[in-house]
Image 1 (tube, rainbow, N blue to C red):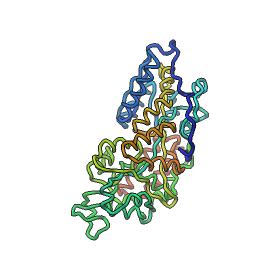
Image 2: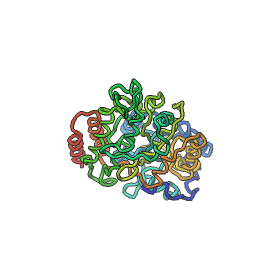
Image 3: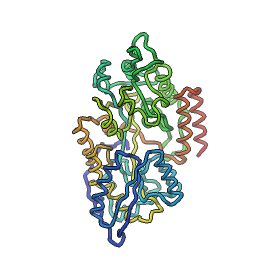
Image 4: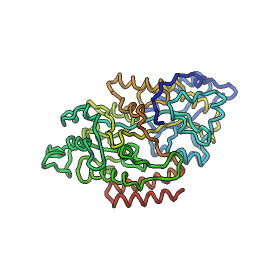
Length: 438
């Protein structure tokens, strides 16, 4: 995973043959669920090509919002109405594995000689447990900073300076100095000027999504760059949320909003996150995942760019996450479902997705297509790709009891950022509660 994008892998065709034996495929309809509305039309293009190559097989794509998606999927598992194929998130993997709702793909992969090395290093391994493969890699993401180019220039910050900011949990480093310059109160005073009013801010420098338990976009990159590690290892049994480093990081992030007025908080941005505020010119910068590129591209009607996260005491860090396509163990169309999953992971489909520029697909040639698609629109996405290529990523936490741990930690982090008590105590109590799960 830490060597993501480091190697240029040869494009293989072993995964490409999609034709189904007619006896297995006659008049089959494969249901496919996903949560990203930006991706649904692109995957419809893949489905059209798949259907043309497999007469009698239809793909029905259903898209729903993030929260509803997981609620309906879980309900579908218990009521036997789940889709044949679904987009899977690593945070749900342990729970789904324990509940037996995913089909083991190992034998099918071997029988069809699917070349798992055709994916970027580490992506397939994330979905392997007990020497069994539970999903084929779909795409991957890292975190970077979306910024308003005019606001940054008006603050006297060059693109080069923005790309080389440093951060620490004690005084915020040059990154916090930049935030001060970018924040403007209702009377036009900047955050680094005498008379600035932190309680009456017109334009915030920084904004992030409502915090969750793992802080993929909100705080994980800061904490990791200062030396924090969330769990002992993948599929381990110990969390470290009682770390003083995490307490200092979240305290600093809390004070950016409550004390200094440089940042919004989770209550201010609401469920839609910072992108609407960015498009409205109310914030200058926001840490967001690479999957948000098309959202910013379509909604921000001004010049914007993507900058790397600031370097911490231990360098620049970004959480890395990779999605997969999985088959429901209760599917009545498993042969057709497997053919569809295999096609989703093929060079043809993933290159179609790459050219659309909505995500970074799991295969290197499709990543190249995505980079070129963004370049053609004047968007430099190197802040996302270089952090992965440099081996500066760390994995999304994956452990048993993930859903329970996520809920406990989300409450704790939210309470810290909303100043609901002593950060060290809140985090230690939550950490003790989580570790008791094991």
